Length: 475
Ligand code: ADP
Ligand code: MG
Image (cartoon, rainbow, N blue to C red; front, side, top):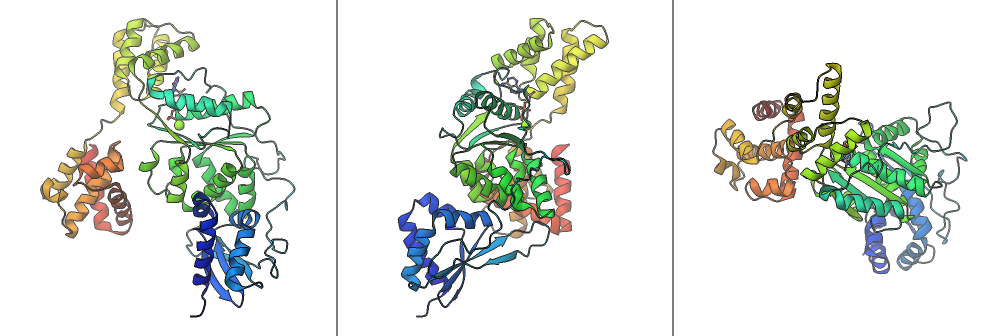
């Protein structure tokens, strides 16, 4: 039997897998594709230049041994670097790089314009034209540990944050993923960790960035053809804090680049801190390899604060603002705004404003009015039962039919719509949605959400279903 690129590479892989840790194997070898075999040269495709560099730096020996076993002493390895093109055009463009010469699989002859080519790092935070290589940490000093009050709801996340701040990169909480609902303190805690590290280790390069800004910078770098500078910039950070990581959902290019930055930082003992409004298992449209990395360290949840913590937060805020408020009003606020600390703060600010503009005392009546305004705005959450009922009625079937095992198209679609809306309108996890809608697993729910997303962009009739159901469910 004649050798093909694939068989040769599979044999190499088998050898390599036996000789390195499974983590390393998964990270660095599974993503590789064998592309071509000519004479004694095997071409493999790698996802990025960084990837290529990493292989050359860390695995060249084992690659050489494996390949020599397969192809003899004149074996050669050719890397093909697959670059991602993020602009609509799905066609990847490939860049071919001649491998290391002769039997010697080393990188000297490889033309990769990455390492130390640009003497100065380009800093994506810098406005063009202004020279500045110092990296500003973008931290908000008002968000610190001192004013991040501790309670049952945040104890784990807060102590993990403190541990990380004491020994950035030196704990097993790497990455530290802080997740929880809106207004529960993710951004505050992220900054607090950064501020504390800057305090304790002024020489460390700390950077806070929202996932949204990160994405914009990345897109910009692709446009300007300096993606490598972008990557490089992030690879020299000691402590990287990325806020609202769920926003990378569906953005394959940004996820890919973040994956490489993450790996580089992690392998070099640098600290990564992430926040997200969802637990990793509930993140949608985030690549598996990235999700699995999010789970390497610690995921700590910020829960709704209990009554005592809410009271403490209100009192602390009043104290810092130099305002006094009768206890019964503080208790009234704490009793009525339970699920969002930002709203709690908003209500306090608005109460103070009203009373001082109108020269009125802060009374329970005033507090009631303001809370009504605040709490009315927060939508009541619909239940999954209610969603199933509305969707079944809409398609004129009963809930049992919607939940049944049948593969009939219109029933499957109704079920997928119910799952989609359950994901959209409730805080339930994928797994819990699945178990409530006909005993399905979380992957089925995920698939349903994707299908509905797809169909509503490609199918007009289907879009109408989604719109009409959305109206019915959110009125
Ligand atoms: P998220 O990023 O989770 O949406 P934020 O970090 O923006 O929430 O927090 C919302 C507001 O609540 C901020 O003003 C923050 O200072 C305040 N906050 C949150 N948690 C606490 C806490 N434990 N102690 C004091 N203030 C808090
Ligand atoms: Mg936030």
